[in-house]
Length: 310
Picture 1 (tube, one colour):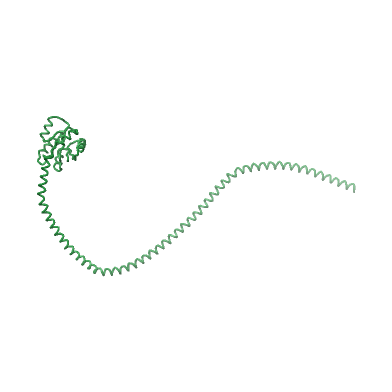
Picture 2 (cartoon, one colour):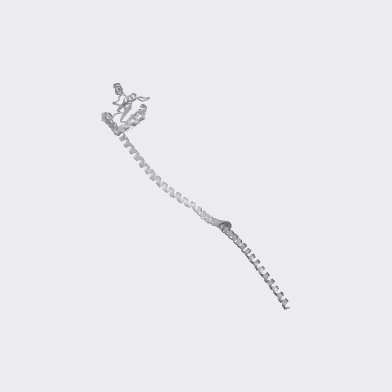
């Protein structure tokens, strides 16, 4: 069963719609009385839950429009309102509503309203309409089917005839095309030989060009290798110089303490040598005086011997 829920409040539609869906109803919604009338005219609605207070066409007016129309009078309308009172219930009854629910409706009240809907009186009318429609269209369907079957048979015959004619025409066209293509084939074969020769010549030219390009590339590679070797040699020399400088600096740092120690040793040795030289000079002086004395004694002896012997 499809229910139409009419309310200008989106929140109210959401809350009421959930209650109706919980009762197993399929729910369609409208935001105004005008929209509700449009939906009822185009969709199969089983029951309408109409808000009483809405801008534009109110719930009472919309209910009256539904119940007073022969095409929609069979649809039960339940007026939903936030106000209670006998006057409102009387107005709803006069407009054709089957009952009034206070928003938000209680589940028991909603079930009671749904149980009060007498769908049994509507079903026979609908069934009678369906039977009469089926009876009225049955003959038309049979006549249409006969006509369609005849058209189909005629189309099949035409298709078979057309298919045979097309096959014959296609065979003749293919044969004529093959005959007309014989000179073309011969010309194409000659052209193929010429094209092949041209392709071979072009391949030879391309191969020669490739060889020239490869040779040039080889020379460029060799030149690049020579440059790389020269740069490598320069780099080695630079690294060697840098390494030698680093080694010299390291040796100098290592030898500096040794040089200082050597200078101290040399100074001490020179001091000792000077002392020894002074001692040696004193000894030599003493020896010289002794040798002089000996020489004088020897000379005196010689003079005396010569004097006495002579």
